[in-house]
Each structure stands twice: as structure tokens, then as C-alpha cells.
Amino acid sequence: MERSENIEQTLYLAQILAEKVIRTAGQVVRNSFDQLTCVVQKGSHGDVVTSVDYESERIIWEEITEAFPNHAIHSEERGHNGQSNEWLWLIDPLDGTNNFAIGLPVFSISITLMYRAEPVLGVIYEPLVDRLYVASKGKGAYCNQVKLAVSKKEDIHRGTIGWIQGHQVQNEKKSVNLRQHLDVRFKRMMRLWAPTLQWCMLAKGDIDGIILYNSEGDDLYSGLLMAQEAGAIVMDF
Image 1 (spheres, helix red, strand yellow):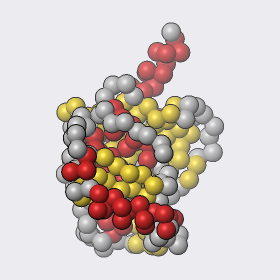
Image 2: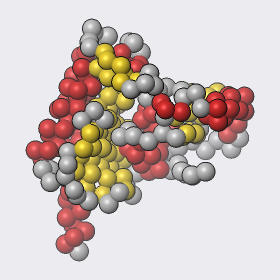
Image 3: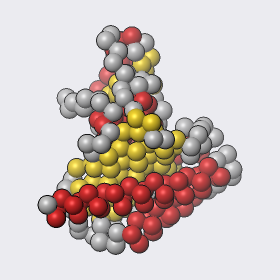
């Protein structure tokens, strides 16, 4: 019983911290949007990183480290903090950096807490419109404290689906063929290049499904948890 209470207490404190720090980082991102910033190419697949990514990451990383010094942390730019713990924080300080860099207002910040390799808390913040999404395992998903539920469209081919893929498979033949197939089979296929926002749209019922192709990263599990807690079924083909 004591062990269970400790887990619940950690989750409670973690959620308070995550909601607070993600808003702080979000204010930095919001104030920097459409302003001149340092943009650097990252890798060979067209991804970029900005000075805002690093500042948002610093704020979140330092707050988590101070509150939970023994927890493991992995972040998009800094990598791993070297701690070995059954609690692991995943940080994407700016999901949709390419959009942010070109002045497209479609991006978010994502914080996930994993316990024994399973997502138990997901917090996603959309700073420009002040939407705070929170999902806690077994307790539902919420946007600004309003409970979320996925849509129940019977004929999904008349619906809108999201497409998410890894940068490294952008031009892979199988990926291209699948995208083309989906494009003609559904009313509309959406690609935001801000995966967490697509998962939130699924959780809200704004879109009807998501196809995920070879995508893995610090932004994945908060979105998956958000969708599952809103009633989505996640299948691995």
C-alpha cells in the first residue's frame, strides 16, 4: 500500500510541476514567435533547431532536475541526464520547430513522465492559443480542464486522418505509397509536422484517426497517452 501511495504522490507532484513549467516555457516560445531567431539545420533530413528550443528546454530541464534530482530525463536536444531510474521524463521543448521557424503558428511543447517504460503522465501546451492538454493514466484526458473524447464516426473513410512519420523515412518508397493510398481513400489526410498537436486533435474528436509510420521520439508518448485516455484504440500493424 505504501508503495502505491508513493507512486500516486509522485504523479500528483509531477503533474503540478509539469503544468507550471510548461506554461513558463510556453511564454518564452510565445514571446519569440515571428521574431528573428537563430535557426540551425539539424541532421540530414531537413530538421532544424532554434535558440528558442534550447531556452525552452533549459527551463523545463532545470525545474525537473531541482524537483526530482534522482529521476532520469531525456530531452530532444540535450539527450540523457545519465540517471538510472524507473521514472523517466521525456521533453520535447518545441514540437513543430520547422513550423515555428517559418512563422507557421502550429507548434507545441511536450512533457511526458514514464514509469517503468510506460507513459503515466502527458502534458502538452499550445502556447499561442493557451491550450493546456493533460492526460494521466487511468484518469482521462483534458484540455483546459474540459474532458476529451474521441469521435465515433462510423464511416471513417468520410473522415479526416492525420499522418505522422519520422524524418528519416520521408522519401522511403513504402512510406510514399502508403501516403498516396491514404490520400485517395479518405476525405482528407492531414500532415502538421507537429505530432503532439495531431494526437490532441484526435483526443478532442477534431480528426478521426492517425497513421503513424516509423516515428519515435520524445514527443510520441504524451500524444499516445492523450489519445488513449480520450478513448482511442492504438494498434500496432
